[in-house]
Image (cartoon, rainbow, N blue to C red; front, side):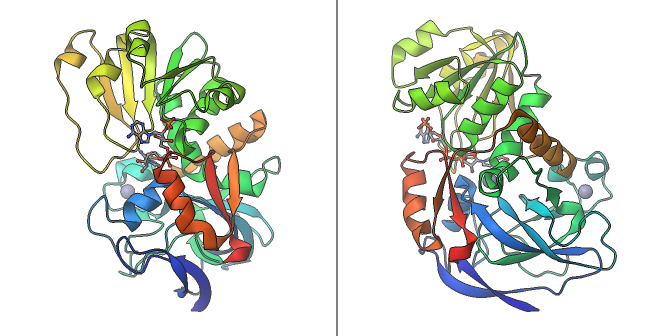
Length: 346
Ligand code: NAP
Ligand code: ZN
Ligand code: ZN
């Protein structure tokens, strides 16, 4: 075992504080990663505050990990010491079910293992990326292309793949009108990726505060959802709406913005259930769908896509002692557009 420094929430809703955790010895197929940067996802906050239900404490959040390989097990074939690598939301899965075989490990029916707030195959709690080092099976490690800066790449491991996967699945591209709801960590990546895929992109944000940024990141249009005129003007406009909102939304009003046969795809994971009038999908044969992160192969594809198009995330780099303050700013929708922890400060 190796003792490493980390930031952990000792209990639900308690502020995160510096501590140490044990990492397992590097096994045959394991990679030891010196973590350089870890993104702060809103999911970290939902879980550290038990907003999604009972959680495991102490909790070391962090599933947007970028670092450098410092040791490999004897059976590792894909990585060598010195490689630039990333780890996202998963560190293991059953590897045998239909979904795992199809590269959809995130929908593993035999039990995928989350990067933190989960139990591994030996029943040990997993600890995430707000730490100096992590040991991960090579099958759950991806390569960060040279063209991407490590700090700007970290958020791609969750925010990038969570928006890339549904945008690809629902065919965002030339001739398609795509709306992204919420301009936070996921939303700003949704805008960049949908634009790079060739879609006509509209941001639907609570206000126009971030309009200039949205247009710079690739949006063609930007509207405030606090203005009721937005919903009149945009009725029946979109082929695809991707919602990244962390709080419950009035789905009926957003569904009215879809064309016939349009799809509203939700990736936001609010803590409370939402209500829906089913007539909102009956009229216009609309689809209401959800999507969860993405598989390992697709995560590599997304990283290569971002490198090819020359973009990572827009980040605010912080020291580990600023994590609790950063959480408050995320909760206040005051993030531009992803906080990334410099792991050297842990
Ligand atoms: P974030 O950075 O906080 O962004 C969420 C955005 O939603 C905010 O910036 C804000 O955008 C908007 N918003 C917040 N509260 C709102 C409200 N009450 N009404 C309307 N809009 C509101 O969070 P994130 O890290 O992008 O994560 C977003 C959500 O996705 C979280 O619930 C997270 O847990 C979830 N998530 C899901 C997956 C998945 O696999 N499905 C993966 C990662 C994260 P504006 O200021 O532009 O309005
Ligand atoms: Zn996440
Ligand atoms: Zn499986």
